[in-house]
Amino acid sequence: MLVDAKCTFLGFMLFTLINAQRNPTISFISKEKVVNIGDNLELKCQAQDAESYPVAWTKLSPSADQEQVFISKGQSIITPSNRHQILYDDRDSTYTLIIEKIQEIDVGIYRCEITTAVNTKIFADVPVIVRIPPVIADNSTRSVITAVGERVTLKCYASGYPTPMISWRREKNRLLPNQMAFYKGNNLTINHVTKDDRGTYYCVADNGVGQGARRNIGVEVEFPPFVRAGRSLVKQALQYDADLHCHIEAFPSPSIQWYKDGQMINDNQHYQINTFVRTDEFIDTTLRVRRIEKRQFGIYVCLANNKLGTNQTMIELSESVNIVCPPACDVGFYMSAASDHFHHHHQFFLFSSIIIIVAVIVSR
Ligand SMILES: *[C@@H]1O[C@H](CO)[C@@H](O)[C@H](O)[C@H]1NC(C)=O
Ligand SMILES: *[C@@H]1O[C@H](CO)[C@@H](O)[C@H](O)[C@H]1NC(C)=O
Ligand SMILES: *[C@@H]1O[C@H](CO)[C@@H](O)[C@H](O)[C@H]1NC(C)=O
Image (cartoon, rainbow, N blue to C red):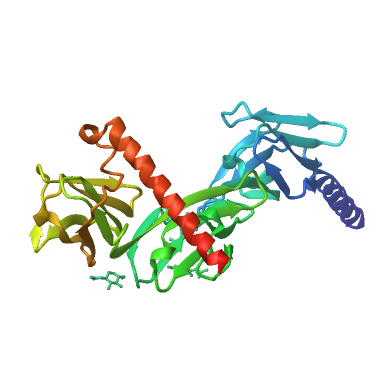
């Protein structure tokens, strides 16, 4: 009985000894890795007493379901990839997983795993984080059209790792609604839009990786027309041409009309209307009164109208004894050496008069 018991005890000891010897462990796993796109990466897993068990590298994808993909088993790569290699060093029983030319898809938790029985595994994890330059998200504002007095919020989000910082600037370093040249945050709100708020805004995303990202956001502000005269009094002699200039600021683009005595003016042999669009909001219109007849002197109205309102200005055309150049002199059929001469004499006369007036004032 005693011998038997001793035998059993010894047997038990022997069993636990062998068992202990053969119980695999992971004695080392690489620390968390933060890498750049394009880098090469090495992950090490040192397995003790694992000679007779399969040691695998797997990856848990970062998505919610944490799907586990096998990359290697023992000394062979099983994922279809030419960027992955497995090296085994039998001196320290280390399995080194090499990933070349890191891509964004390589992000995740890498798990070194030893299957010891059908449902028994031991494992150790190493997270791999890839630095990713910022990319401005699609849900960021692209452009807005707003109107004077409204409230508008420009939004900007960006992906990337580390989390990008979002900031705002304006074209030509103009001031933002906070009265500064710079604002930090996702949402830029303009509480009471004015005409001066229109223009290009820059959303800048930066996380220290790469060049950063920028989106140009156009802000269009609708406002009623503002009309002003080039000169509100224009003089010309009978039978010569006169140009009446009118400058308009409006958005959206207004319709423009010229009136005299309540009658709308059309292009014809007496009048010619030219309109120049300088930018989206600035328009110049010129009414040429051709070979002025007596009845064409008087008050003209330049009027602009868009969906937000109407504005107008008056320009008086009055008779002068002198011929005013331009436009008189640069029109083909008036053009002659004589009229050019006249023009120069005229200027000379004006110049001399000023000198005389100045001289008189100084002498007093
Ligand atoms: C915009 O998209 C980004 C990333 O795609 C997301 O993180 C963010 O919550 C979204 N913002 C809004 C307001 O939808
Ligand atoms: C920006 O606006 C969105 C919704 O419009 C809001 O969910 C978010 O909290 C705002 N972000 C900040 C930083 O105020
Ligand atoms: C045109 O607009 C200006 C500025 O808004 C305003 O002062 C002026 O009274 C307006 N004129 C007319 C005739 O509507």
